[in-house]
Length: 111
Length: 113
View 1 (tube, helix red, strand yellow):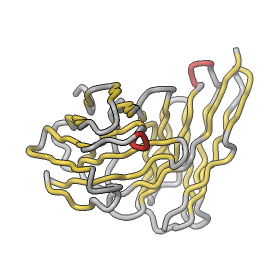
View 2 (cartoon, helix red, strand yellow):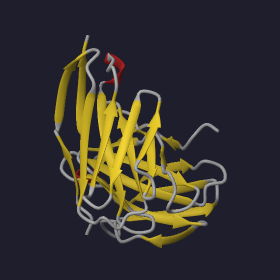
View 3 (cartoon, chains in turn orange, brown):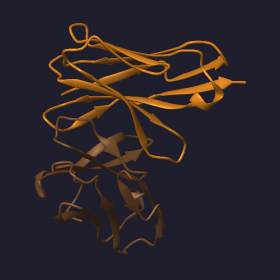
């Protein structure tokens, strides 16, 4: 069974600081990994999808890395802004379709 | 595309009543998922459809829950009768295939009193 852990559970930083969010998973036989953002009372917004053959994926200020062998992924958010405040979820497939989610990291960026 | 569309956004109902949640997936996506999110258990997969056919319903908690996908552009999740412990946020998601990027709707927040 795929277990996904996200550390830390919460993070508070001043505006402008870089964010580092960690995700670890127990079964390294994955074909991709997806990072989502969830705002309070809202749905999940897909941020990045990394294929198992990739080491990293970038979108604007976001960069996600993947190390399958060690069962880890890291999401970097550069030059954080108050609008980045949200919960960030990591999701890893348990089989051909089912996603296992971490509990998320709740980020607060202070102006 | 407008993304995955769910309705209603909020539903408050009394225990014992029937509740129907609706979902319109992204056009062209062959895979549809229903997830439930609670504080205690996080996000859990309830049921997975591929090409309108239910493939995995092992996450459906009880016989009170049922889901249908009559065509490629519409799915429903029904709870009958509803109970207070069913209170949660229910998400519908779709993807081109089971293995590709999943896109989620805004969710339906269900409260059963």
